[in-house]
Image 1 (cartoon, one colour):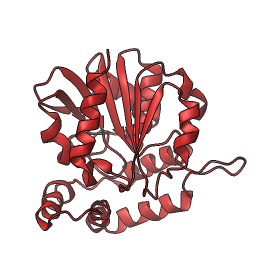
Image 2 (tube, one colour):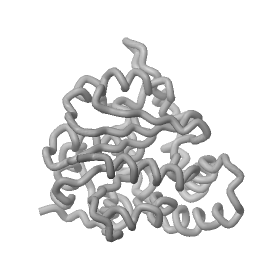
Image 3 (cartoon, one colour):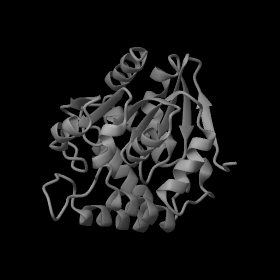
Image 4 (cartoon, one colour):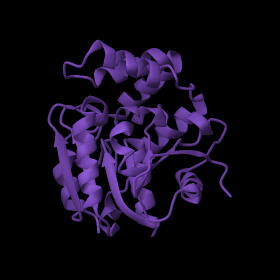
Length: 258
């Protein structure tokens, strides 16, 4: 039996599991919760080492997935951001109880390759970000969150994000950050994407400097069952910069699944 916990909100008819990314817990979904909770039952799962699961740990991706599946609802849709998208994709490949998959600013392989062309990021960029997180976690997260807001949002919106996302985080341990970093560096799901026989929606930010938009057309070919959408004026977190549009897209996609 899994020791992981989750938070459930919303009174809709559709079950939607949300997995956050590396470095931040499930509070990062705050900008879209109000828009989604009337249409969905939202299962906010903090990955091991984060948030309410701060005291949990995992040795590898397979063990973590086993723990997550153990607490997740049956026949739910899964929404994963960045590292959470990688994890949700792996779950969709091996778990028959997934009814649909949405990935946001995610990639089947995050880092570039030496032997063949793949427009991934340089692993040194991840190392640098990890170092910044360990040296000054809150300043680094605050800069990241504010860098996502490229539209002329109000000062009030920025303060809400600071108060409810940034400064409510429990600082992940160095071990948790290192394990997540290694997953981002090492996992490659490109060769098995075609095995996912589910409705799939992939969302990207055109200005994302972590997941290059150039992978979109390549993954279109690798994952023929999927649909891709690019937010032209978004970076790595479109649900922060464009919460209303993002929410409408999620709702429409999920309602059209048989």
